[in-house]
Amino acid sequence: MPRIDSHQESNRSQLMSNCLFCGIIEGKVKADVVYRDENVIAFKDILPRAPVHILIIPIAHIPMLSDLTLSDGSVVGAIFGVAAKLAEQFGIVDSGYRIVVNCGADAGQTVFHLHYHLLGGRQMGWPPG
Ligand code: AMP
Ligand code: ZN
Image (cartoon, rainbow, N blue to C red; front, side, top):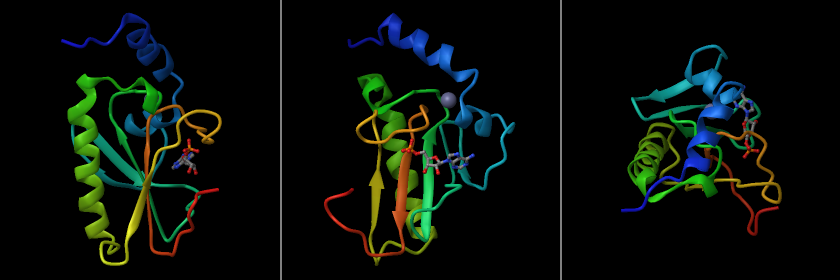
């Protein structure tokens, strides 16, 4: 069975104490929360880049996409399920939408708690900038 290595596990616990998004999960930082269950929370992005811009994140402090392991499969699946539900709720299923994860410096990741951007409500360009 694949296992989470100890380095990755210590990263997860060390970084969560001063993590902005863990602060939102704990209710210490205010956010416009649009969905929550035991594994996933979603809230509106503070600096929206589209008419609909929601961040969907795991409750567990996973710093970035490259930290995911096979044992995280269920939470990643849940995030995509929540995204589909929110796309419906916010009326962007027919017009279309995009899900983006920035991983690391070149992608422009600024908050190191894994988050999936759900963007919609306007025409988007390709390739991304
Ligand atoms: P990224 O650049 O992919 O790491 O995305 C981080 C996102 O978090 C950006 O779109 C920010 O606008 C957003 N953000 C930063 N602080 C907050 C906050 N307090 N509440 C909601 N969204 C935030
Ligand atoms: Zn965190």
